[in-house]
Amino acid sequence: MKAKRQIDLYILGMVLAILTFWLFAQSMINIIPTMQKDLNVSSGILNISTSLTSLFCGLFIVVGGGISDRLGRKKMTYVGLVISIVGSLLVILAREPVLLIFARVLQGLSAALVMPATLALIKTTFQESERQRALSYWSFGSWGGGGITTFVGGLIATYFDWRMIFILSIAIAVIAMVLLKNIEETKVAKANKEKFDIIGFSIFVVTLLVINIIVTQGQDLGWTSFPIVALFIASIILTFIFIFFERTRKHQFIDFELFKSKPFTGAVLTNFLQNGIAGTIVVANTYIQIGRGFTAFQTGLLTLGNIIALLLMIRVGERLLQKIGPYKPMFISIIIASVGMSFGALTFLPNLPYIIVVFIGFLIAGIGIGLYATPSLDTLLVNVNDDKVGIGSGIYKMASSLGYSFGIAISTAIYTSFAELFHNEHLAGALGMLTPLGFGIISIVILMVTMYEKSMKADCI
Image (tube, rainbow, N blue to C red; front, side, top):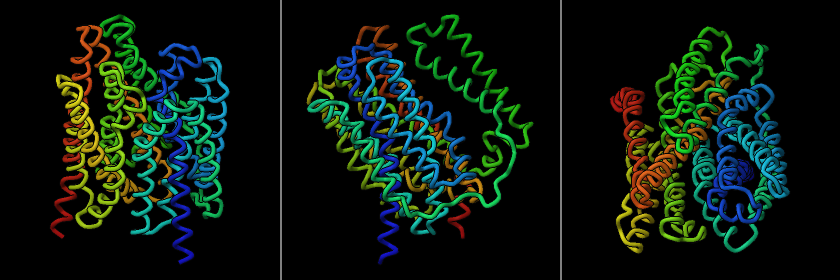
């Protein structure tokens, strides 16, 4: 009984560690207007600071996973939580854009350490059923945290000082550190002494920054303008350079050997796209506030069904994984999530019917995302060796952060472009909120290519 209680406390500590990321990342979506008024900075600066956390998390999370393998997963979890606390303090104290942006970068770096380190701890600390249970609860913090903190952020921004969000994040980080105090440290017994692939990493960072600039600034600069076209060509060239360079390296920044496993590849790529689907909720939130005149708190209320359904279905996904394997739950969940999130495209509806439809759509999307979480995570971990679990987890969470970031960027780019082109907020909102369907179709194709054959073999056994 004591051992089970201790395991539960460790799992709770990991969930709270993940929630610190969402409290400072996702909640900013609903508090941008409030922060803009209070800090007297442009919406552009706040949009940049919002996306920077996910971007830097995505850029450095593979590095964070590799470091945790070498130096210790518990140690890196603690380092990440300390950086999170510092970042939150700086946001609270920020009175100018430079400090705010620096704080958000720090918070992205903290998540890059905490995410893969806690996943690796789950892989190396727990066995089979306990591992799957731990993954379910970890998903509560990772997937459910986004919905919870959107609601909490809207509530705090509407009725209290927005800085309370970051005070709460600090408190939760401290509690997580206390709960994980006695968990056993794990790391690679004989870590390789090879030098870090600084050239490959640098090419990778520059490539992603170029792509991010294209997606986020294409609207303002013009999609056919010389800078955007030049950056697009540069991104293609840099991508080929990165792949060619990494294949010639013995010790790669991103270990391409892991992608020889089709299930690993399927889990990573569909996770990228599933997060892209989830990220399009930003367009819905923006349209509902601008096009329909709702407050941040009222918009947050619309996500309650999404949160509840997601949290409930995560455990259902765990049960389905144990009974029928990962493929079918992942297949069904992607369809449900992409269709549900697209309900917001019905912008021709009057206010009350539209709000009801959006609430139902968010709820359906929550069912899909919840079903997907545990089967996807377990597929990843069982197809990675213990000595590379930190790197593998880092790649998976890099896909999460970048998928969410690009989901936001692509859907909002479509939304703002058509709003300016047609001067019609409702049409622009509809087109922006159809993005999840495109992500869903691509994701289904990838899943069938990478996991269908193995699923059929498992069914025949």
